[in-house]
Image (cartoon, rainbow, N blue to C red; front, side):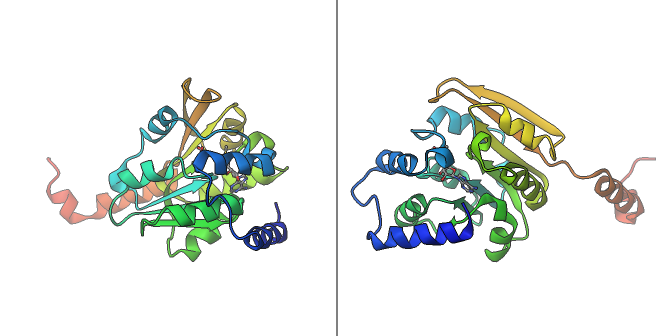
Length: 233
Ligand SMILES: C[S@@+](CC[C@H](N)C(=O)[O-])C[C@H]1O[C@@H](n2cnc3c(N)ncnc32)[C@H](O)[C@@H]1O
């Protein structure tokens, strides 16, 4: 979806007086699927088992900014907010105004920001919200059906926006997402969750510090007399 198409859809959506006021989250999610089946890619939200397994490896103490792509009706949002530091932030990005409107009305936590836009623009969105990088990025995007070129663009910008030591967390019904991730992430761990409609694959792409950054850190440590003083002979 282009920026112009997004803007047109948002105006049409506002003209109808907002959506989902009487629908519960599953109703809103299903309505979004009927409107954009290819972009949404699933008829019901992720299960609590998928959420727990996907978020399991996150080090919440170090997480200052958590970003989510394709939050839908916010299945992951409250579990993330429940674990996030009090001074942390959660930014979610979705192309569907129906979902962004619903999230803005239902989640009032001051650490939460819902942005109507594309995951491909994550760097601009993170910068515009006052952050210089993200610690974790979670994706529920249907990588298999994204328009040509968008998947690689999203993986590249995600790798750039992540801080060293951070991770790209991805769940999908197929291995396609892993193929995209492998263009930038050299260390990818994987898992599987049966109790989800449909059962899904989980991937964690780790952004390790570059060899140059590690070498720099070692040089600084070796040259620091304070560090050397405590070193046994
Ligand atoms: C399978 S749904 C994810 C549902 C939700 N995260 C869950 O766990 O139940 C995929 C979501 O990705 C969104 N989406 C598709 N393309 C996108 C893009 N380029 N940037 C951001 N969101 C996108 C859709 O609007 C939809 O909300």
